[in-house]
Image 1: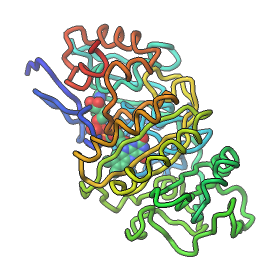
Image 2: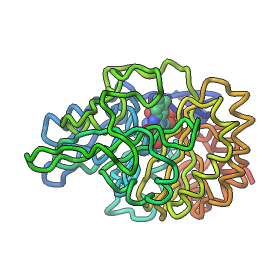
Image 3: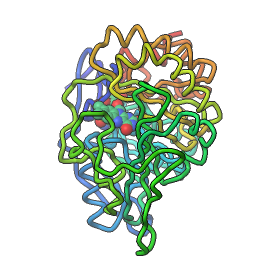
Length: 390
Ligand SMILES: Cc1cc2nc3c(=O)[nH]c(=O)nc-3n(C[C@H](O)[C@H](O)[C@H](O)COP(=O)(O)OP(=O)(O)OC[C@H]3O[C@@H](n4cnc5c(N)ncnc54)[C@H](O)[C@@H]3O)c2cc1C
């Protein structure tokens, strides 16, 4: 079959139109095999219909782990890597940073393999590819020996304590997430995900920078069922049952939410958080929850963390796009001095010119897209607007 335009989709969990197509769509959902586990190289190769949940079970059973996961395990590995999806942790790069090779079918039908070892900068340009280079058919990922983790939640961290101890708080565990509804001068919850080392018992401190240890399992959003969340309360368990916030056997996509996220260079983190706090009267009524996470710097051209460690300021909104669309420009204006970059898979209103000015490797990325896809077969309105419009 000949297609003029073609868009590959993953699990279609992106909130903006990055995965939309005006013409043909291809889903690799059924290509979901693990192709090879290479114990010597500590690498796993998967077909790109694989979702994290499925891959995690496979790896754990074989004694291996991934370095990090997003808040839920239901998304596809390929879709997550294409948009630089991330979890949290000062030393954890986004999920695309562990890709060591990718196989894809380019616009002329050629099957090519790009590898970190062999293709250097071209590879760094291709991994966070925004779906524009071709149909990615296989990915090889770095893996780690399996590990156990325990999760503890603290409640009511005063904002002033966060300001004075920002680095200490965000570096206090393997993965740290802060949740706030901006209803007051406090962070509602601090989620600490720690790796278990040794067999010595671990008793969490009752107080964490003025926040108190939760005494029962909690959900980030007040009033929501905590049984959907991964196990907390210091109970140790496998990495893939602690790194995401939500359990694999819970289907989260009720469709009752919208999401936006801005990645701010780490040195500006608290100033940016304060700028958002100043908009609390406008933000809080539309918000389900705001999450703050840290992500390590990387070398991937279109990653918001290219050469800079970042803090992600994430908003889960109520489903009221008209009101959210009116609010996002205010948030973007407040965050502009900090060079905040929007998440590629979430909602934003920034102009294409502004977005493009934030990516120093954009001209090289445009060149890479033109090289692999000279006729624009894989380009959609999103790529035309945000990558190519001048
Ligand atoms: C409930 C929820 C929670 C989330 N939590 C997080 C989080 O914790 N952290 C975070 O950073 N993000 C998070 N996200 C955002 C999400 O991770 C991204 O939107 C991600 O891209 C979704 O992956 P997907 O498989 O659904 O991809 P899709 O939305 O289907 O596609 C995304 C991009 O990948 C491309 N693509 C897909 N398959 C291929 C292929 N085979 N070849 C080439 N390109 C391809 C598409 O063309 C598109 O450009 C969350 C989203 C939801 C709905």
